[in-house]
Image (tube, rainbow, N blue to C red; front, side, top):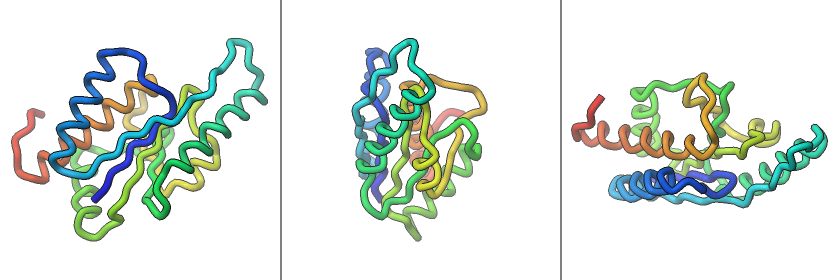
Length: 159
């Protein structure tokens, strides 16, 4: 099974980069993990709604182009379906056995996803009803995936 985490923009904060690197390293024991950052488009402070829509469209196209053809796309979005850790673990179990064998999680930039990204995705997932910075979402997702793989393998992980 292959997991792709595709996100808009680079992580600037060192503590987040370190956490992402650590969980990426840990996950590679369990799965083939690809972590890709596509360029973000700067949003000027006084950007109009039209300009913001154009920026979202550009970033959305970059996300969709970066996803492997035929992969099971999952857009992370605050209005998506919330999964428990147990549900994520079950989904991974199913993906490993029955497929799809390539899953791509799409993380938008500061302006979020376009309707095209949401419509193209097979699923829309919310990590929480709370709002998190899009850079922190990467770390939360990787930790959640790591927790699930540990549980699937019967390895301890604190609750």
